[in-house]
Image 1 (cartoon, rainbow, N blue to C red):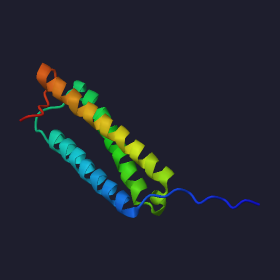
Image 2 (image 1 turned 135 degrees about the vertical axis):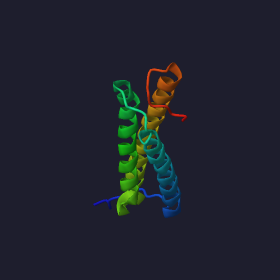
Image 3 (image 1 turned 45 degrees about the horizontal axis):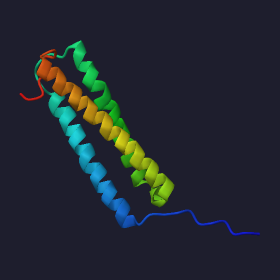
Length: 115
């Protein structure tokens, strides 16, 4: 009978650095959304276009943070999944910011990114 191999793990210091980076970027994403949403100008339907990927991307980032805070996130497979979820979230937030910027540049939105 062969012994079952131990699952591959990562060093906790490596995970802690990733956890810090995820927290900082999530904080930026939430701050951007808060600043953009608190703009006193009226919202229009076109603002839903950038808002959707922003909100979904933040949800993915929160999910990644929650996964990294779990004790079993030191398992390599769990850690890699959390990083993939986080990167999807970052790409969605970036696309939402790009869409908001494009709306601002084209003048199709009443919500202004820059004042």
